[in-house]
Every structure is written in structure tokens, then in C-alpha cells.
Length: 394
Image (cartoon, rainbow, N blue to C red; front, side, top):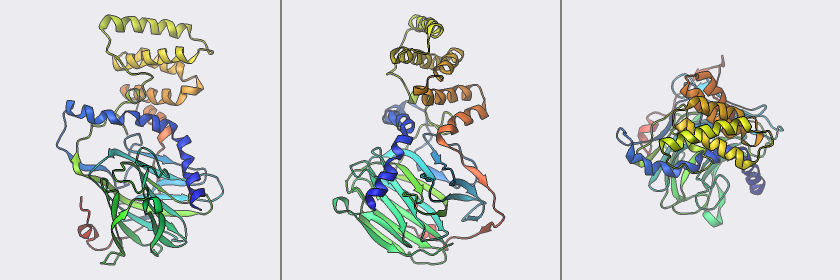
């Protein structure tokens, strides 16, 4: 069973080829932070109340919508405000719906995660994953660190490192909010888990020092995943509210330069390392780029396309937006680089103030959280003072 599940989740790596490439410059972020002007450090890495349509992107989240599944903002059930996140799916379409949150990579210290979860049917599958650069289901260091799941009506977690196995925790009830309070100690490769049930003062589960799924001390994390059934064998329907990801010690982060991203796609997706050019050298390059563009044929080889894209990147970063846009539009006609070029065109749309155009291109890859209105809407509340009692106050 575990092997089948691993294969299903691993197939995501193909879908996320562009997203993995986008993350290639994250290591440079820390080196550049001291060159920026920032407000004081904050422990908050990401926070979602799911009230409004936040922008998707490589520094916020990715929404995976399947043919019959849905990831949407719903007013059917919520802990606070007017809406929560609703994730649903039906079996048999060889796909699944997912909310994938990105946050700054944590290689040391402590990571705090809190969220509320409501299951409409505990017999259905729910999967929560926390992973590093090596991705989910990879049990090497910097791979899959924490895996929580409902299975046959039981909430369980995968723990034990090399001798990993599923350990049952408790049997959740339907249509009840559960407050999940998770503390991951990166250096030790262990975590604490407390879960509170709505209306119940004591925690239904209070674990301390559980071994991570991959069992490696110092295993970094940077992705959080919420999905249902990996094996596409059953229906699932659950709600999540008030998700927060924080860290200790507090960190500085770059400001957002465009919706959903702290770097432009042009900076994140270079064809080759950028080198400093003098004014005359840059002017000569732009003249060459125009000539290369005029002479470009549909049978151009990779080298020709690379040098033209690199010239367009230089033009974009130098403020020559018209030239960059002209080149990107032509390069978008070549299938093998269409994805990366469309993301760079999203940067162009942003600079030109074309809000809808930028969003349309970005959401082609990162998805969108739409509103799902439901007249059955009702407000439920969490257990009294749950957040105040939680061990991982952030």
C-alpha cells in the first residue's frame, strides 16, 4: 500500500518541473538579504485565513485542480471570518486536488505549523505533508519530513526513520473542527504534535519528540501539502482554516516584487549566469538581439534560442521592456520553452500594469483560489482558548 502511494505522489515531480526550476535561486536569497532595506525580522513565514483570493506563485502557493476535484474558498464551514479552504475530489479520474504552500527554506531551528481541520467523513482520506527540497515521498535527508493521514477512520502519522511505520493516533469525528498544533525541531529531526477537538478542553493527542518520517536530523523543509486520496480510489471532502507557518529564530524575508513572488521570473529562470556588462557592450548586445530575432527560424537550435533568451533577460533587467517583450513573444512559439517564457511575459505584464494579463499567465501554472458559495453555510467555533493553550504559540 505504501509503495503504491509513493508512486502516486512521486508522479507530481513531472507536473512540477517548472516549479522546481523556479526554486533554483532560493539559495541566493540569504546572501542578498543584507543588501536590502527591511523592517525587523518576523517569525511568520506564511499565514492564510482563506478569506480572500490571495495571489498564487512560487513564494506563496500552488493550487492543483483536477477534472472533478476542487480547491476553493468556501463559506460552508469556517472557524473564523466568512470562509475556509475546501478541498474535494471524486475517484476514478487519475488525478487529485491539492493545496501546496511554499515558504522560505528552514534548515535549522524550529518550525511551527497550526491549522484547523474539518473532515466530513473520517473514512475518507486526508493527507498532510511537510517536505524539503528533495520533495515528498523521498525519505532521504531534506525529503519528506512529516506525514499525517486519515486511514480507515483513524488519524495516524508515519514515524521511525529507517524503521518507519504508521502509528495510529485517534478516531476523529465528522463535521467537527480539530486544531492541529505541530512543532518540528529541524536540528533533531523530531516533532511534537498536539490535536484539540472542538469543545474539548484537553488535547486528544499530545506527542513529544516523535521521529520524523525520513528519520534524518537536520532535514530541511520548505513545502506544505494538503491533499486527499493519493491512490484515486475514493472520494474526499474536507475543510481547512487559519493556516500559519512560523519559525524560531525569526527571519528576514525579501519583499514581494510582484504578485506571489519575491523575485521576478526573469531572475528566477536564467538561461545562464548573468555577467555585468558595460554600457557599450549592453547596447551592442541589444542590436545583435534584434538581428538574431529578425533571422530566427522555426528550426533554430537550442544554442540560438538560449542566446536570444539571455539577451531578452538582460533587456528586461536593464529596463528595455519593449525589446524583451518582443523577443519573449517570439520565443513562446517554441514548445520546449513555452512555460518559462510565459512566466517571464507575466513579469512584463506586471511592469505594464496589466493586472488581469499578469494573473492569467501566472495562474496557468500556479492555479487560482476561486470562491465557492454555499447556502448551507454555518459558523462553527474552535475549542475554547485552544490557541492560548497550544504549546507552539507564534
